Length: 283
Image (cartoon, rainbow, N blue to C red; front, top):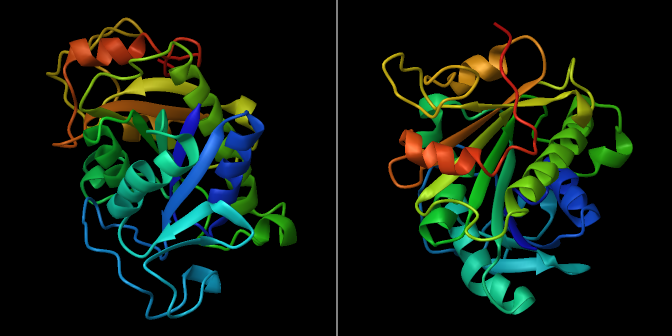
């Protein structure tokens, strides 16, 4: 499987996910903003040469608008927004490394959850939506734990919350991608992406601790969703992540409007995820 990943390239969460995907046997290339672009939604601009160093001084002032790590050309940056980084990964890097389009785009894991209407301003979700609009199946991942720290903390502070989160969220995201892709193409209905949110690692320090719950973006008691757990109204994702325990929310959203989708579209995705396995919230 060829996978393009979008996230700030110098964060510990980046290394955790990259390592987990490589360990799972995926062919991965990274295309990531040079700086932290959190909260920029689906903003887009022409990439420009750097007028200051990349985040954590990972590239110097004056570096070109797009570039790569000298020791690993699969680790790339784009000096613009997440949408531009994922577009560069799909249109420029994937043909170079894969000989064609990627099979899947992973965006994140973002540091901090992207729940409900927050998806409108999330750069992580914006990048996943852009991939879907480009015709590439995608998922945005976000987790409650972690801080904006350099990847070097994985070695210098291996027991810190950020390091634990990087490894746990990376392993969970790689597992999720594997389950979703196992059924072959088409991976997802056209025009949608998935929004996955993880709770804090404080009481959930291992990937095996987590359960997956199919959810909707916003609370709507009048909604008619796909039937799961004996109900045709899905729990909203903030309620899932906020429930005591280790519950991760999985929501299907329209990649253009960033809103909930209809029951038929939910059903098509639900059928792909049975082997996660999916769970119900406690009653």
